Image (cartoon, rainbow over all chains, first blue to last red; front, side, top):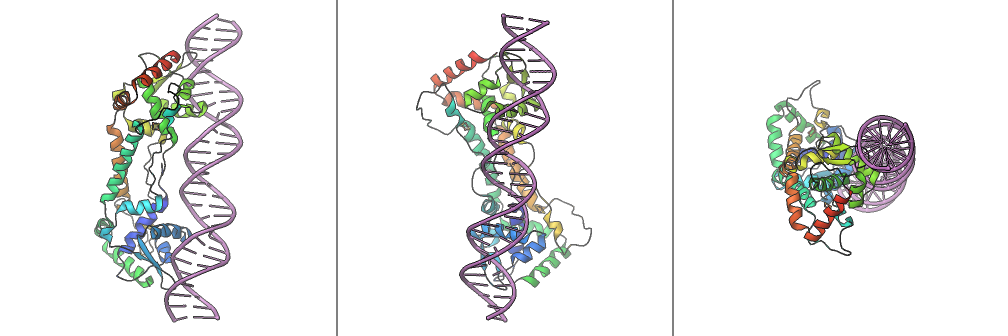
Length: 162
Length: 162
DNA sequence: GGTTTTCGGATATGATATGTCCTTAATTCC
DNA sequence: GGAATTAAGGACATATCATATCCGAAAACC
Ligand code: FES
Ligand code: FES
C-alpha cells in the first residue's frame, strides 16, 4: 500500500498557491520548476485538483492555477483524495462466501467483521487528514522554513505569477 | 493506495487457525479450499506470516500451520504488516530540496511538515489496527456468523487438521 | 494572427500485484 | 527403507497501475 508521489506534489503546490496574493495565477511551468518535477505529469495532478474544485484555472499567458477556497477551508483529506481517489484502502472480495459449509444462496446481513475493522482503521487515517487544514500547514512552514528562503521563494513565485 | 488481497486472506486464515485445538495443524490446501483461493498463491501469504513468527509450521502429511501465539497476543497490525510490509504509506521524496531559491548545500533540520502530517495519519491507521486483537475478531465472528455455519465449518476444519 | 496556457486523450515504460510451476527438504505412514 | 504429503522458495508469466511523454484543441492574451 503506497500513495502516489503526486500526493506530495499536490500538497506542496497547494501550500505555494496558498501564499499567492488575491487574484493572481501560477502556471504549471512555474510550479514544476520550483519543485523540480516533470511539467507534463505534474499537470495531471493539478487537473485532479481542478476537477475536485480545489483550484481554479485560467487559460492563456499569465494563466495558471489559484486556490478556489481560502486555505482554512481546505483540509488535507480533500487534497489527498483529489489525486489518490476516494476508494478505501482495503477492499473485501467476500471470500467468506466461498466457505463450502454455507447453505446454497445464503446471504450475509452485515459486511464481514474483518472488513469493518479494516475500514475503521481507514477512517481513522482519513479523520486525521480531515482535521488538518491547509492553513495549518502554511503556518507550520512559515515558522520552520528559514525566513530568507521563505521570502526569496515567494519573490521567485510572484515574479512568475500572472 | 490499495492493500493487497493477501491481507484479507491472511486475516481470515488466522481467524480459522485461532479456532484450532491445541497442537493441531491445518494445511494450505484446506485453507485454500475453505476460502476458495489459489493454493499456490495463498501459500505465499502464509509464508509471510511464518517469517513474521505469527504461525508455526510442520512438514509432512498432517503438517500445515498453527498460530505461534495465543489469539489475544496477536493484533491486526502484526498480520497486516506481515503480508503488506512495514513501510509507511506516504514516502517523501524531498521535493522541497529542489527549490531553486535554496542556498547551495543547505540541509534541513527536520523532516518536511507535509511528511510529518502524512505520517501522523499513517500512525493513526496503525494504532487502530494495533488495538484490535485476533481474539476480538474471533469473538465478533462467533457472535455474528450463524451458529450452524460456525459449527459445521469447524467440523469441516477438524476433519482436515493434522 | 501568433503565442502561451490549460485540458484531455493517446501512448509508452517500469514497478508491483497476482498467479502458476517446479525443485528441495522435512515429516509421516506403510 | 520407500512412497506420499507437506512447507519453503525460486523462476516465470500475466495483469494492473504508477509514472512519464507527446500531441491537438480550445481559450486567453498580445
Ligand atoms: S470476506 Fe472480505 S473481509 Fe471477510
Ligand atoms: S519535501 Fe517531501 S513532503 Fe515535503
